[in-house]
Image 1 (cartoon, one colour):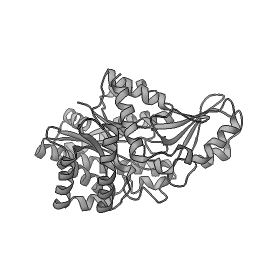
Image 2 (cartoon, one colour; image 1 turned 45 degrees about the vertical axis):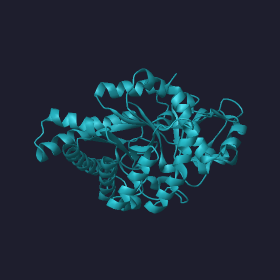
Image 3 (tube, one colour; image 1 turned 120 degrees about the horizontal axis):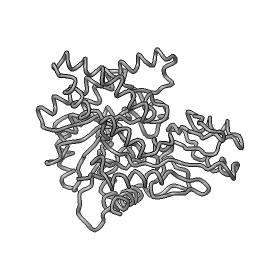
Image 4 (cartoon, helix red, strand yellow; image 1 turned 120 degrees about the vertical axis):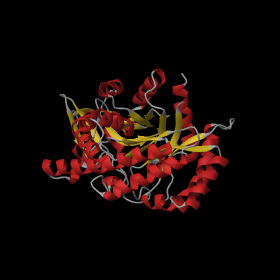
Amino acid sequence: MTHLGYCTNIHPGEGWAEHFQNLKTSVPAVKAAFRPDAPLGLGLGLRLANEASIALAKPDALHELKTWLAENDLYVFTMNGFPYGGFHGVRVKDQVHAPDWTTTDRRDYTIRLFRLLADLLPDGLNAGGVSTSPLSYRFWWKTPEAQADAVQTATRHILEVVDDLIALRETTGKTLHLDVEPEPDGILENSPEFIGWYETVLQPAANQFFAEKRHFSQTETRERLRDHVRLCYDVCHFAVGYEQPADVLAALDRTGIRVGKIQVSSALKVDLTRDFSEKLTALAPFDEPTYLHQVVARRAGGGFDRYPDLPEALAAAQPGQHTEWRVHFHVPLFQETYGVLNSTQDAVREVLRLQRENPFTSQLEVETYTWGVLPPGAQAPLNESIGRELAWVEEQLNQ
């Protein structure tokens, strides 16, 4: 069975009481916009800040949430554990990675989310994932040696999470997986870097870790690792990196690494072979102060240039230098053009076609978190628009 829902990181609230109130206000309206004539359940990708996760772990709070979910035909099938702290109304930028996987704070937060997810999964659903940061933000590490040390520390903390997931499976029968989410300028930025880390760093470290701790053979360790550490396929992120969906899936298949979930998302795409000045002018309103909007630019002579945020790309832009830009700005799924600008909706359609024809995950999570920072001309009523996105995805899957 395929579970389709949306990520609640669009709803603010770092504390649980505030976030829960926003869920109670918005989620039923989204469900009504998506399926107004059928009382079918709506899946949620629950996003909890660290502060909220601590409060929700209290039995009374968790019971209240489970009761509300049941009364409204809602269920949680995945969680977004990438943003740890403030995600709305503050300057997020590179701090979305903080604290990163080099810290025990990130490890402990993620373990708490998994224990909550194990309790929240509805009867009959015995698998679910938590998506997470691609280890750290690469520009925080000033030398290759410092970054290599960060990767080793991060990997050790991830293995400690995996050990907890193995124990949870033994006690609950539920297979929970950490879904690592490559993104521009993360230490793991794309599928080759993710697969390379998985095969050359994570797997060897796991072999030693679990031989010592659980006396696993290397074969058993490999099986457990593939159960509990998977890829979060964020369509926007892979499209920004010009990766072809079929190539990504083929590379994963060769290594036996699974996709934990698809985060269904779309990026900005700009054809710079004509109307250069007009398109830069159209891009300017997307330069906003909350989130990072990395740019990967295809050079006219071949190869790529990368910019850590949209202001740097706009400042460096020269006519004839690039043929295309991809911008890490999550834009509405159902809209293909924004005036003279385009989106990577074609990549979303292709991923959903591949999923429809040969399913490679059971979990799809719509993740457009930028509604509040879109330029005025692209703004739309929030709950209705999320419902439209869900309906658009369902239409693609049912073709």
